Length: 231
Image (cartoon, rainbow, N blue to C red; front, side):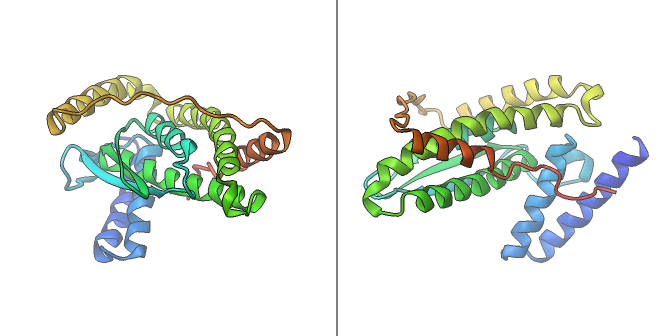
């Protein structure tokens, strides 16, 4: 193991200790996500930091309806970051909200949820800024669809950057393929009666203002992965 990688692992271990000391608090959650993002960025496995966790964990993201609408773009954002960070997802529809359960290793799940939280909050804030009337939920939904499509392209750029990090020469791609297969098998075991959902047709904006605003929101979404010096 090279010296740079060991420094990163040591830093992650310290952050996880802080997360455990403040477990159940907002600060503890922040430390946990910080450690997970470093692990995802440098493709560090749970076993390398002696993380006490099962092979796979599940964590949940909820999004409430906008008026009478169940936003299509939220599903797109969830799918985007699940694909970027090698996790799987199942969703459940309830009366006033939809719930997505993200499944994978600790680092991948927590990093996925971090980006989902940040990006959906950004799009929702921008959509309400342009269309503040409560009855304009359709406009906000269309706005989000455009932003989500731009973010999809940017997220794959992010994944490429991750794959070119210090682990690129260590068989990263092969590890990802094996992990994806293992997660799929775990899902089938956990949810034997799970049905595959059909993707619904996305309604794109019919006016230039909505399109341009949504595109700008997608381009300005916070996807910076440089969250701190690992040294």
